[in-house]
Length: 147
Image (cartoon, rainbow, N blue to C red):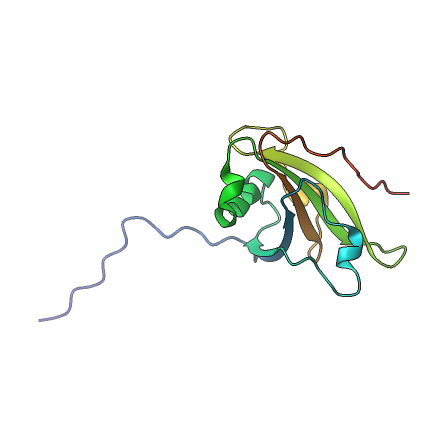
């Protein structure tokens, strides 16, 4: 008796992504406001950190889904997620913030398909997500403008 030859799998395995994932460091607030830039100073970061392995083509909607897995209260319909990239300022010490878009639980939006790459996210940048519970208006934008 000879052992049977292994049978080919009926479905070929999915192709592995051509690029390695990156470690995305995400910081969240649940008061609708982004973290202050001084919270990122001198090697410190806010305590609300999530670490997500993802790719540069991850969309804001996909990232919203990952955050909702960790924070069940953010799953409520109407919860607003405002995304910003926090990056090192090359002209002076410290960090700067650039708001890039927003999503809402249970509702399609124009920013849903926006990717990290399309917003010039660089490996090493942070993502700051200001979460606003439903029925609470997001605070007026305090967007920091480049000089």
